[in-house]
Length: 392
Image (cartoon, helix red, strand yellow):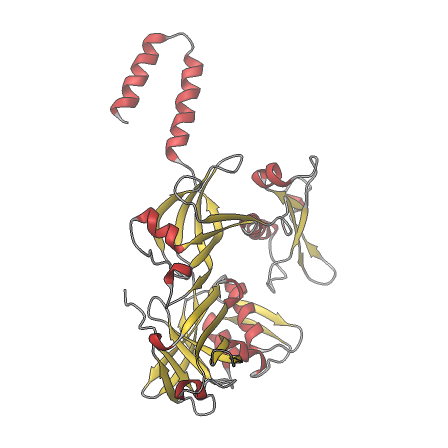
């Protein structure tokens, strides 16, 4: 995988031409903060004031930064701060796509059976951005009830098709081109496992139960005044529950209710389809309650590398014995802070997890159950133990 150069290119916001390049030796205290949810991406760094490079760092100009994986992220400068004591200039910038929020508008209307690519074309019409890599999906319908900006519309598209947005630029000659990708999932499965409280010292488990629910009520507006629910196929109940969530977060045996109405225009949605969507949403709700903040140096120590590279959206496995019941998880890098000049400051937040079954634990449970059922039949016990050891 290509290693980023660390060079920050400065682009004139009016001409889209590159007007400067800042080498990594010429800036410090740099930090890139990113979050997959809502595509948050911020960059700040400090240079000496009075230099040619500093003169180009004016508000609304762009800074291009190559990140891991070779993607070039465009940032728009939102604020600069001069310090007369050490003659430094600190620049604060955000992902340039935030400007899509004011770039154009989409009229209220109903869209019938369109693909992702068609929706993205509508969202980007009249803007500087172009359609990039688009995952193929079936046709979907959508209603826009009020005037909406391109940035919000892109988020609605991603939600409708259950995709993730990725913004990037490409340098063509001395100019830049901007692209919006709609992909299934950012990052990859690293295949690595860490065990909380055994392997990692620099890790925090953050639990937020503010938006937790143990029972989810789902509904969709049908034709006229009709409301579609799952009562007819769910023993008369309009909600589904999650046993693990109930065990952890119930209040004196009572459920915490949440409400869900899927982003769809399907007035003929079946209760069965609604229930499936509710189950997916329930998992998201439970998963969002816990995240893990991990320092990069700790990850490197566990995996035997000086600085184990973590990319946006990467998945690792975490054994967390601090929960009751214990959790064996696949957890995803959903946020991070990265510094090119000082990688020891890197840290990541892992969340969006799913529980996976520990096969060894399951085998032990089955083994103990069989032992209990056999009672005093010692000969059979000996044979069973021999088989277990042989297949061990």
